[in-house]
Image (tube, rainbow, N blue to C red; front, top):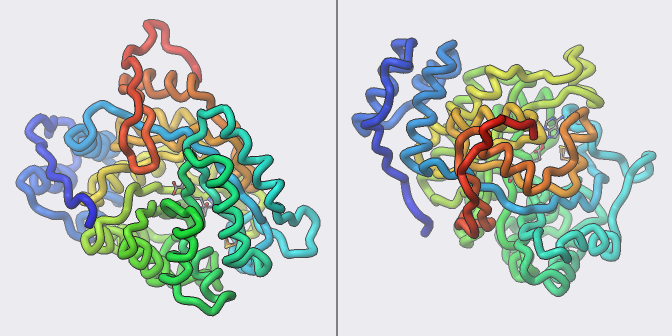
Length: 395
Ligand code: V47
Ligand code: SF4
């Protein structure tokens, strides 16, 4: 139904830059056209050869995407923070109970007011996600999508995680498929990858006890792909998961991609420990993931997910500096000009709430890459000059 596996030509790979023998053998096998297995992914997570992993990931990325780094001019809208799982998703600082201070649910007028940033013609995508709110059922989102499409017909709607789709299905007593069909009819174009966290049942038990199981996250995405609705996928890392949990998670994503080809991009999400119960329980504050791990998550995603074309770095989570370095570790896409962002800023993200086009261009050019604006299906809309300034500048 969608484009299939992308072949890579690794003839230009600098094998001498890979010092870890295990990573070098993996590189040789990829170059010979062999597919990696879970033991290889584990070996890569265990390896300290960061530069070797980066070299391999960069070569694969260049073979698939050249020097082009894409971004979308998008805008996040979080219409409700009311969530039935507020007390059980211990890593979340965004959700509120209905009567709790700070709880909100937008009216359609409020959604429209927030969406009005798109009136300048720059925003091409709304990324809409929120809590599992008992009063935000199918009709609420159908009205929202219809209203948005009526007012901003040129803006793509990427909305609702698999967890939200399953929530709507449950409260409306509908199947996932029927919810997806109804929402698509109202204007849903694609789905974001949130809600995956780490699929392992043991991890979910600890950090998201009542959340949709990993296999069901895959099931909702499968249902979407079968309807021709493309989706993204994520992994939340840097909390209580083991390296083996990460491997199992990647395997489940790769398997579904083999089956449907419906994933557009993979986005590793770095856990932020501030202002959430899990962070307090783990005794962590500030940035909990380490730079090395952030880069390994990107590089291993690129190397292992051989049937994905796009690996996205979410600069809001890992900082703009780390995202820029990530462009040499297999990343070909950056989360875009997010106009307003609430979820991570509720859990201590210190990054700005949005990035202008100019700063995104500066960031990409500073890495020696060619910036290109894309649409929500990753089709390039316009490319920009590649030249980096002689005097490197801060973003
Ligand atoms: O599923 C919640 C994460 C996700 C925390 O598809 C946290 O294009 C870190 O998935 N620390 C939602 N992360 C966001 C998401 C996303 C973002 C950007 C682009 C796309 C896309 C998807 O945010 C949740 C959860 O994994 N999250 N709390 C936290 N304390
Ligand atoms: Fe609700 Fe999502 Fe937060 Fe869990 S992570 S409490 S499902 S908003």
